[in-house]
Length: 185
Image (cartoon, rainbow, N blue to C red; front, side, top):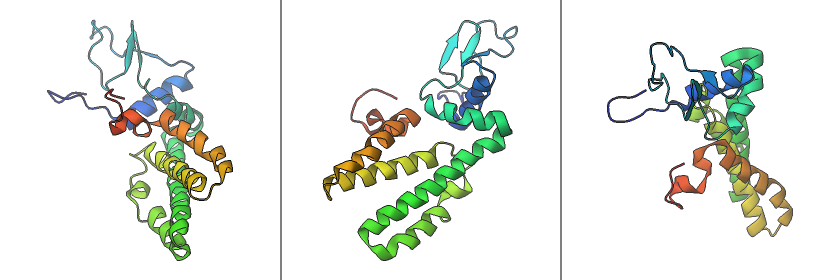
């Protein structure tokens, strides 16, 4: 969608469109109304890739649509919310573990504040991927602090996979998003 000068990319809509395509067995879908849009440039959502008369709605970070597809296939849109709600719960638990490292008595406060007091809970239907990203970032942070401060190198067992999943899941998880590289995600 465009508003004149800027392209608006609704990630949640693109996630669902890509999960729908994957549920049908393909990464791409036919361009809708191709008889009206002969050049294939007018799209309801800004796709990443147009291949001939087909479009791949979300091709940047494939992990999240792949995680959504089984839930979308079984229960449609309501099923996709389960992953977001699970991510919110995991982010709250991870936040509680981080708070525990600061002071033991903060554990329950952090759990409840992050679990119920966060916008992730109330906006979970429009923030797909963000809650799971928060949980993975917290897990990576816990692993990093255990490796550095406590010299527990076994924490690499969850630091490295959560960091890899951060990068594969969303742009916010990659270095270029934080300005470490001058390349756009």
